[in-house]
Length: 84
Image (cartoon, rainbow, N blue to C red; front, side):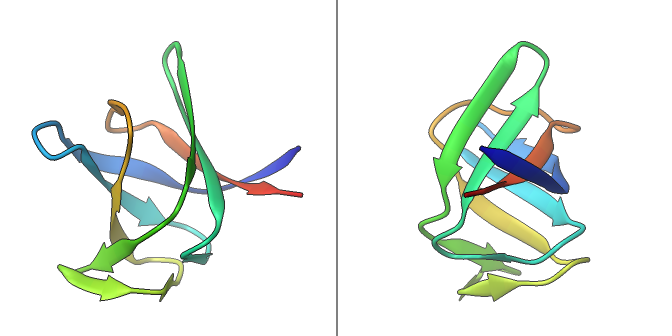
């Protein structure tokens, strides 16, 4: 399972379990990502995302996207796209 870093967590909203990710590479709905941080690793399928509170199917490098996640993540955690 190969991984390419595509961004980092910018903010996490614990009450709604949503993280903001600043992208350095493209991301689209259907991709599988892995969020890595201190002592934690979360593998997650991107089922939906938003850019500026508007649903989006694709995002490009430089976008700040909102993703619903199943567990707590922290600002600074790295986000990797799982390839293969």
